[in-house]
Image: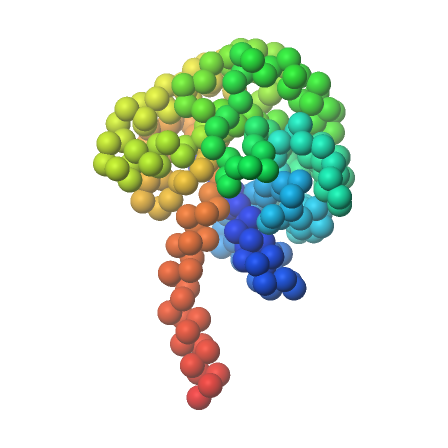
Length: 247
């Protein structure tokens, strides 16, 4: 069965927009775990726009021995303020998996993967450090990526296919070409000996189609759509509870 790892970044965005501690990211993660998810994902950034280093540490304690813990981020972004850097956070918290993503402060969200032909040698020492810590290492890549044999050779164990273009094509009703591109990427990665994860803009609407096309899909990491859908699913109940209190 494909593991669902819930990305809780959006809970931190909402909390940070007001200050204080609500909504509680630990309580949200706990609810996801109780509902049956197999993992929790966070994507800390040096500008601390959402998940902060203390959140990463607290979630490590919450998930330990219960579900997988996946930390995403740019390994080339250095320490800044209270952000110690991705490798150091991994060293402190010992997540199950670290997913390396080539993002920067100027990106609203991750929007492309590594070029494994160009980036593999700069990634080599970082992958080695993470493997020494005991983390499984995954690389964020675009559909159509190449260089999977080289990735395996430096110790990478998984790739995560960036599914933003797939989700956009699905929404536009012209999904087949991008779906086939993702499926071909997955086949080639698996043939090289890498397991395949996927994430970005996956939703209840498009996930089933994607999973059916990717045999052996190991994990999906979903945050934005899942949290948005939870607002609709839970809103009626929450409003009724407030009304009951007022009565």
